[in-house]
Picture: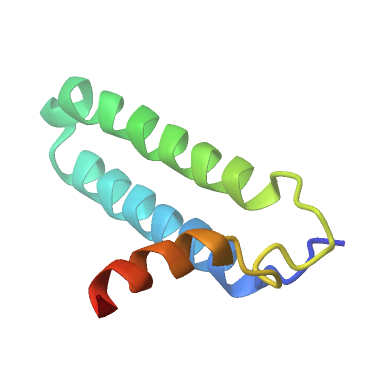
Length: 85
């Protein structure tokens, strides 16, 4: 379904985000005065996690796009001919 994507990449992003959120929550419980300063950090972490998740889910074609050579043989021939002479 996801054409060569590894679930590990998504799990790492979600796991690290969850650990950061739990750590920030623990800091907020210990020092409640930091609530107003930590609140934007929650949104930044949530936005980054959503961005990385959507990037992981984006549509891809099932074919191998790296299979064919994108360089033009005729252009390579012209460049190497100038070096020989």
